[in-house]
Image (cartoon, rainbow, N blue to C red; front, side):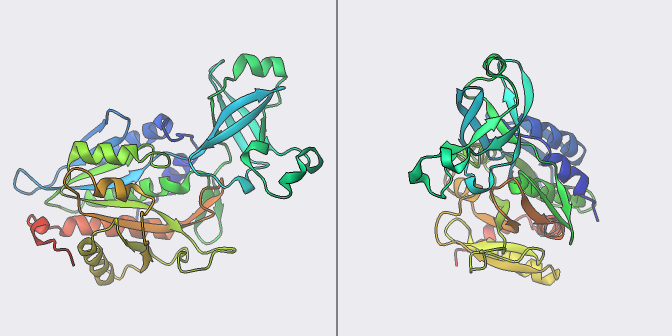
Length: 353
């Protein structure tokens, strides 16, 4: 079985905030180049890797979509050498004080180390109480105000800088696990396909800007026009204060999502395959927009039958997101087996039921 840990750790050790994904895209290109027949970037920066099938040309194609962008912060103003920030994507502000960050300073073209700080409670407005808002947070680079003014500009990016941490139980924690763990799962799939013939063409896609606009999913689906698609993303894991029906146990298998953005026939086929292969799986139900690239792909052009495959992530949208390596391995294997089993006329068998 592929040891995906070193690659995943490298993915969650770089920035690549939404709209600025180049640092992580470079790592993925290097890893995928020997695994695909063609690789290129779309006009907006999404990564497309084509692995050709052996079926009769013109072959149908399947798009496996993962997003490579990450949440982060952006400098909104500078006061007395301290940086006020705003969000890039959704962030849980409660856990930010004390987090190490990197300020991507455009004025000096440097990456400045910094820490997110919260002023003492008695210096905050009384109306704040115990509720922390992003407006109250500051980034301290340690520089004097005059040096900050020379180096940092309003609009500069701020990314998380904590190193990946291996926890017990084959769990990896760090920033940007959502959704670079899915990049790792897709990489496992591609490596398994080296030894598995498949009839369909496969587009391995790492999209941009999922956390902000779904831009990469819309544009890649429109450009590639696959016959169907599978989106790989994280779901919410059970943890402290999170034990309801919308959460799933980490390390217990692959999530197969059903809801408005997912085609029920594809869901059924993935479920049957997982059970046949004895890959543990769980049902994830979404009653509206899934909040993933699945929505954008599903509604592109005349509509693309789309499935959503997941694994649980604990502490979502914080710098210490955690994921089970077993779940990533299982997801990669399920994807590869599904692709290898596709018959040329599979698209003609799809029914809406």
